Image 1: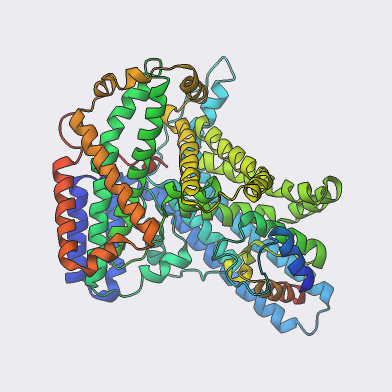
Image 2: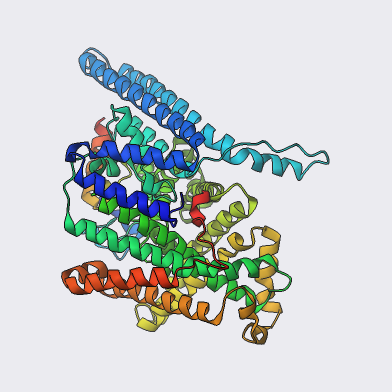
Length: 75
Length: 527
């Protein structure tokens, strides 16, 4: 999880990713950020996030994103 | 049958009465299908063939895909314990390929129809410009709203293949999703997952919904007939004689077209959503005060929203996260450094999206260049972001009212200048005319009576100006308070009724009918 927070902080250092649950709803992360995250996650965790998982529910918080990574790595 | 024609108004009025008074509430979707097919039939009976083939293709392939996916999942579950991880992976890879193949055939047919009908002559024209012996153009029909309903079926096919929506097993219900008449003319581009929730469910008469819908339709007609169809007269003259109207006149074109396109497109969407609302159906919003955007990215999140999200979900994301792009991203980060490298694939995908957006808007090079110019501006603003951050760090302007107003004005002018490609419909001419704003100083000529030679009278300008002020104030109210004026008016019912009467009178008295005027097609109808 810490590594994921690091990836997110790298994009927006001023956001509290530990507590924020509206990253997409409040337009903190945009489509460019999402693609960067997918690419970093693929690199660091060796988990490929498919296009169908690129939905607000999976990116609204660091926890939701972490849950997605965990689920995909178990598949 | 034009949205702005009397037969269409009567068609909708009769439909609403029959819908609520004579048809059982759980069978109302059937009447909507008949009305949608009738609307299409009256436009041109041949259109029905095209829309039916597209719908039937998506319908059949979706069921085949869903059935195949269910079987493969059941088979995998049954044999999960016996197979090792490698075999399971191989099985998943092979079966995923079959699903993709089914999707490929569905898309090939649906997109093939639009490619042949809409783009054949564009390709011939482009080839002809490069050879001495020209090829002859083919006589093909471009079915009304083909870009809109094709995109709806494509998103449906992909969503079913992804397993994010269930395939519709009733062909007639599916045909209604594809052909729902209010959105055939100019969108919005609905997703099956959203529209199906309200399209088929039994509907009861809801006074509030019908009233909201009715006022919204009137508001749409007001924008279209009082502003858009009036301004188009002057715009045709201005852009039809570019040698005569350059310099400051180009700025006038920019301003008039910004107002005309906005009122034409949002007016049409208001009529669409208003009709749907009267029928108890929720259609996604397509605009969210785009002219109040502070940057181009925000503008595209607020203008033609359903098109933007479609391109993001079905082109930008799949392309950006494809294995090839991920490999390229890794390579570029290793060789070009993390900061530059991670942007390479994003920009390639963004380029593809804007190229497709341009082509989607029309079979002409000026649309392609318009799309690519948007790409250039977005990329430039993305690259300049660190510079902006540094600037704002030094000077604390950001957030101040005057600076917000400046950002809004800057974005409005930028986007309006890009729209010039659509006005002049010729790439070279557009650049020439844009340049003339800075080389030909003829502002005196603009206000020296020339505006009255464009087909509009002083009274027309006054009506259009006051109507634009009204549209601006309504938008400003929503921007500042976050409340829709319709809701406010409905809560004070006498005011609501008064608004309906005033709007109705404005449309009848000031609507652009009669000598010199002709209620025109919506601009987005051509897409």
